[in-house]
Image 1 (cartoon, rainbow, N blue to C red):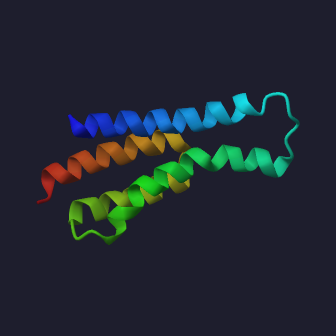
Image 2 (cartoon, rainbow, N blue to C red):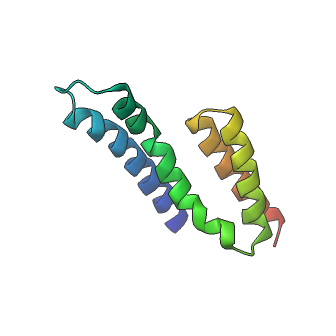
Length: 96
């Protein structure tokens, strides 16, 4: 249950950062640099959640991180999230 709650909270945080950023700045003209920054915030949140696993000894999590990095280099955010969640679940089940 805690895993489902964590996934929900991550999704909500990612959604809110994107929506609230634009809602708060809807009457202002943004520079291209500001727009670019607002577009990468959800990815930064995802990275901050998975970054602590880089220092873990669990082989399943380390393999899942590698799969996630490969997926992130090839796909957009949503498919990468699904691939990483699926890979983590399968690897945690198969590896000790």
